[in-house]
Picture 1 (cartoon, rainbow, N blue to C red):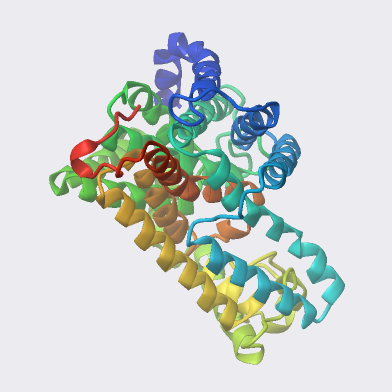
Picture 2: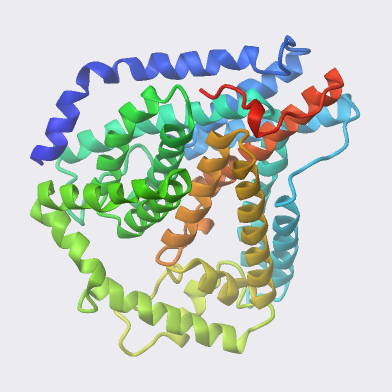
Length: 435
């Protein structure tokens, strides 16, 4: 309690600048179309504003975010049609498209096809990848990332206030920001922390991200959400190693300080991660075992999207804690049980392609901030996804897909500029300034 109050008070003067930071970041998009070129049409402007609004609303309101996403997708399609542009997407989109196809096959073979097909509406979110790839090109990608970080800082302040003043300080009443659930809130904070740390480690004008990073870390700790803690630690370790292996000591230092200063409720929650006596830990093991039985009985198409909860009582282990669960708290097991082993194989293909392509972009020396942020998002999702089905959460998935697309959008903008000017794309020795 004292720790959160100290941090809240120490930043009270700076929180007033959050809104102006967000405003300035969004206004800078006007100068971030093609480098040196003004906006070419009202449609381009509308698409750009929809993109800014979408990434800003993601961490506050799923309803507003979905409305702005619809506007963004419609504007993207209109741009393709009116300008006779060919559909384009980064390589990681094609495994996702195959994953969507296998999901529809699984829905057709589901024990309740209609329910499963209705659940498949989430597949529309995969169009975020080609849309952001088209709309966030060049410097827009970095500006998009800064909007995400700034909005995340505001969201973190809300969570700290909920814990410190509104008594959302126990497992029954956790900080959830302005979203509907603490799991969603912690997952979004996890992704924003990776983005902010990427900016601190690989950016140039890093003061803003360095300023808000401690508040983001405190906010995610106050959610009591262990899978998010694991995801943050994994992403931080990877980024620190890539920047300079000697920086890795920062992780145990921050962890030690956190454990020393945190109230007993939080430290007890931390220690519970390593105890099989914890009922939630035992239940997660039982869920994985039940999922394995589902995969054994339905290896090709799974039980169907949104059907795990329906069939779980039949597969439930005797020592399981909860009689019914909405999902299996493990992304790979959930995908295989729900959609079949072929869908899991394609999802792994997507992860491998994404990791390879993002790492190549980071190693090339260009657009390192957005590349590092994308890499952090993938690592955090994988680590936290061993204990929570974050890939199936709509808010999380929207922010995740946006972050992992930004490096490729930045690269596409550079290629377009080089082609238009007749110049070759600069190598690592020609780094462009990063914010």
